[in-house]
Image (cartoon, rainbow, N blue to C red; front, side, top):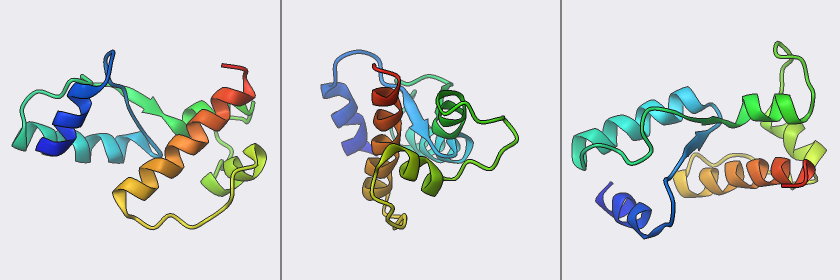
Length: 105
């Protein structure tokens, strides 16, 4: 966590925590950050990538939007999540930035 905090300090701007699902990822990262580093620089909120995908892809809130379906719609290779935090974070970032490209941002 100290290495993570050091890396965050090298970034410009205020970090924003993202995840799919955000509630699970947020609680995990937040707890460990508080426990081993101190107050997190990303505050108490973040971006839930699944919710963001539902909005960008114009899918009803109660629809089952899976990472597989999002990757398919965005043309991102569909590979299994490994549960390696770095690899999974990179895949979630690919989905998020694919959604951003889709809306032209």
